[in-house]
Image (cartoon, rainbow, N blue to C red; front, side, top):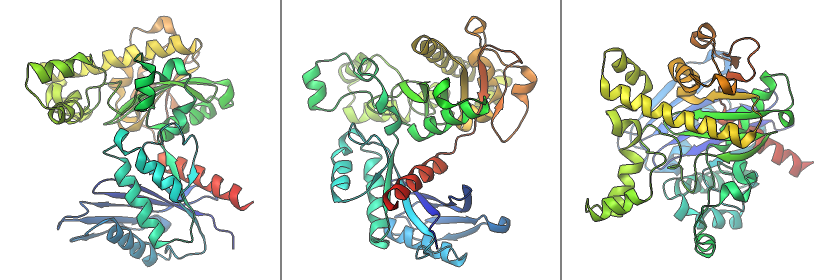
Length: 404
């Protein structure tokens, strides 16, 4: 029997998201989420996909990630999809930061684990949780290939002119300070899917990808290769996000320390968790912000305008970086569902060939679609992202190579 299934794990500090996919057709066999790991109020929500299966939920204390994964394995086994199945080819893990070393999916061994651990200082909120997930899965299935797929990998093709900060080179190299970028699996998937939507090969298409969720990032993709992206050393740089500030003058930090008497930890919390849309108007849900705007709320209007202003700046900058743009693709929760954001982001950019058709833009649909007017010089597209499928695809391709 040929093993064709891949389990994708996305481990957070107190959560575990998972999907089991059949790589013969990319179909989901099961999806689920374990929340509040380590608390008395832990919850596991599991949905088998075969036959439109109904979701199941269990609550109660789940002590750690080891217990969480064992609980997931039990739920999968109830559906005949247990982790001991010979049809399971590998487990693919989302790892946020791969630094400069990891430029592609990598089978995990002790040396790889050590390098991911060495990168914790540049991803202190994410890499520790990702490591926990990998170690837990390795202990449960030591015979199975564990593959790390890195958020940063897609962006390692950026030229040095885009990846370097203009600071002392020796200091930057000593402390691994450079622009890494994130959301790479989404940008990779969406750039290829956009080319397919246009009926062209990825190497023939230049795309600006706008991944707009609670976290948000933009990328300039030339012929399937990333040449620039908005996030940097950390996910804080770039666009206005749900709770992150995006671009700020670095001297703001010094000013807050000197004049505001704030600690580095307090400033970190401010910029990462209390800024962005939340800091501007108290909400990070774009639907709620639009509702408030419709009711005449000026703070919500200002937050939306700042969000759009930053987005326009990056669209314009990446048009300049790419020279020729074939498509602008909106993806993730806001990008896929907020028609007013798409409309406002390209409004007034007619000279760049950008516009949306109001009816096409307002129409609801599940799949990839063009929302620009017929004959537009640049296609404006809505392309749903699928990071789990991208992780599974990369994992299965790597395991297939190793076994061939």
